[in-house]
Every structure is written in C-alpha cells, then in structure tokens.
Image 1 (cartoon, helix red, strand yellow):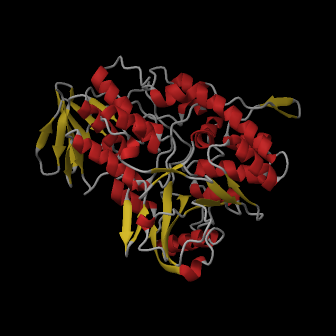
Image 2 (image 1 turned 60 degrees about the vertical axis):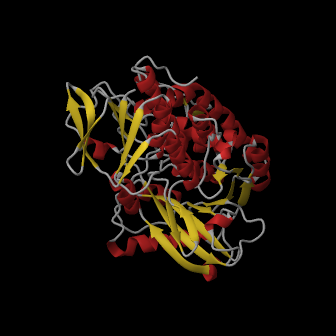
Image 3 (image 1 turned 180 degrees about the vertical axis):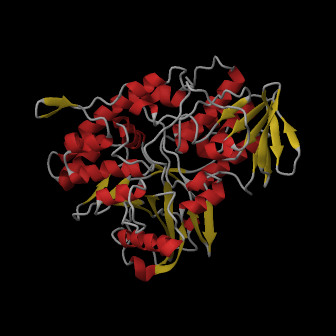
Length: 504
C-alpha cells in the first residue's frame, strides 16, 4: 500500500483519488478551499441555486466507468441523469430559429434543412460524418492512453478528412474550424453553429485546428445530459464515492511545496509548515501554481509545451433569479449567437485595443428543476459566454456592461425577462480565479490533434519522479469528461507503472 498525496479536489483529482483508493492505496487530498469540486461549484441565495461551472454533461460513460470500477453502486443510483431534448435551440442574428434534437444526426439534418433551407442540414450532416472519422482516428491517443513519447506525430497530421477546395489554380483542404465553415458549410448560420461549439470551450475557431470538429461530434453522437440538482450533484457523488473508499480530505489546507527526497517527490509541505510524506504526489493545479511548488524541472525540451496563439479565455456568467412560472415548452439550453462574429472573436481572444465589451454568443440555461428554485412561481436562469480572462473587469464598470449585453441577448430566449428579474449575480473570470486558483480564471479546453501540438497538454507523468499531473491542465485537457479520463490515466500509471497503456 502506497501513500498518495493529492493536491486539489477538482474533478480529475477526485476521479484519481477514488480509483487509487480502491486499488488499496492510502490517499489524502489537500484542498485549500473549503469544499470539493474545483470549477464545479454552486451558488445559492434566497432559495435559488446555480451551477457556477459546467451546466451540462457529455460522455457520461466516463463517470459510469468510474463508478463501476470503484464500487458496486452504479452512477445512476447516485445521481439522476436526464437527457436534454432538444439538446439546444439556436437563435441567429437574422432571426432564424432552430431547435436540434438530442443525439440524432437525421433529426438534426431535418431540423436544419427546414429552418435554414434545403441543403444546409445535409452539409452539416456530411460534416458530422467527417468529424466522426476524426474522432475515430484520435479517440484512443488523445483520451484513453497516456500521452505518447512521440507525441509530435499527433500534431503533424490533421485527422479531419477535409473536402478538397479549389481556389484559382490551387487545391486546399481546411486546416481550421474557420476554413471548414467557409469552404464546407457555406452558410453564416452554420458557421455560427460551429463557432458556438468552439466558444463553449473558450476556443477561437480561426485558430482552432480542424480536429476540433470532434467537439460538436461528441455532443451529437453521445448526447447531452443534465444531472438533476445540477452538475454539482455529480461532484457530490464522486466525493462521496471517495469517502466510501476511505479517501481522507483536508479542506482549508493549502500546499506550499512538493518535498523532494533522493531525487523524487516524497510528500507535500503544508501552509502551516508541516510536511506530509508520500510515495507519490498527484497535482491537480494549474501550471502557474504548480511551478511555485517545486524548483525541480518538470519538463524537458522534448516534452509538450503548449504554445497557443492566445491565452485561454475565461467564463463569464450571470445568474438570474426570476419571478413567475417557467412557461410550458421552455427549452433547457438556448444559444443566442452574436451579431458581430469578428468583433466577438477578437474580444474573446484579447486581440482588440478597446476595453469596450461586445455582445457575445450567449448560452442560456433554463433547467426545469424544482431543486434550483424556491417554488414553481420562480425560476433560476444562468447566462454564460466566453470572455477574455485578462480583462480588467473592475475598470469602467466593464463587468456590469458586459452583463447587460448578456441580458439583452437572453431576451430572445426568456419571455418578459427584464420585468421578471428579481436580482442578478455577476461572476467574472476573476471570481473563478479566486475560487479555483487558476491563473486569471482561465478555463482549459480539451486537447486536440494537429496544429503542431499547440493544443496538446503535458503528459500525466513528469520528469520529477513520483509527481503526476491530473485535471484540465494536463493530458487530455479540460472539460468534465476529460477530467474523469485524466483521473483514470493517473491511477493506471501509478497502479500499473510506466507500462500502462490506457483503458481498454
């Protein structure tokens, strides 16, 4: 039985802790905050409750596997999973409106053909077929296996089978989501639909490789799910599974350093000056914080070094407490697309010289969940948009002005929104930084192939023996499913050693 010290109680760290504990190891989790879940938080006021992190779940099989491998009680006995149907409603700047069914390619094609005109849905459906090929080519190396030592091959070849595009005397193939939209989708509303999937992960489609097509594919192929009571309930269930497997938690306990002994990680130094010895250390923290915990080099020149053209954006949310009953037939998720694509992408990517916020693509979540409202005569609604993590939100009332823009967009999704409003709570990326410790409140997107490896993440093992990386800032990147996968990879590497080849 080995002693495992886990830094942080985010979802990836919890997933690793549960798996390591069931393998017979003694696991202690050190979390500087007062609770578990990391970015999967919760805000409550006056009987209203809101998720402050992700509001929906894709690939629930990741957490089904976690619960299957760590105990006899399956996931569905611990939380109530509800398939969201329609998966989303989209409101485009020209006034076009379309609702897309959940996990039905044929249904989506039909809905888009009806709403956008004959041929539009077929082009989107053909795109999803090609996206499936990209998914099949990258699923194992990007999600289910430790990062290959020759990881560069993942960045050299674009797995998306783009359609040849002839321009003058040249034939080209799309290498970015932006080029897929221009050359294959050929409709500004389909472009907005694709942009929405990228922006949901804080990605700029102009620089995101074509392999990012797997993001809409995952949603269409595996469905979109809601956890009754909010995604925070999923975090609670994973935490309770850890407790049932005798994982120890030390909340309100900051880690100030990683102890080194005989050239390997041998424990953690705590904020009160004490040292907790360990045989392995698992770090679920962002790179900036991790760099402050040890002077030991964690990477070499041959390792992954993400070099994106812009920093990861953050997530800006506005929580709305509304009076009045939720109308019959209200859609769980509505995406109201920006009227100025270029201005939004420049703003989100911090490529503009002005501090003035622009109206973004806004996701409106309206779960029909009695646990999130004081009674049926009220409703809790959450608005979110990608936003520059580095912005000075306190200057010139930027946060409030940006919140007003989100509210204006949301009027297309919520009838009589402003007259029903009781109060609103504005949460900037800076709030995320305070609660999770992530630099500037940035949110890491999933790992993607191609683009010379710029969208990959460091391996779960490091050049500091005994130290492992877990969570959104390590392979395979950000997102709830990816966090669960990173936990499985770290547990496998510790339990089975360097010969571990990934889940089967």
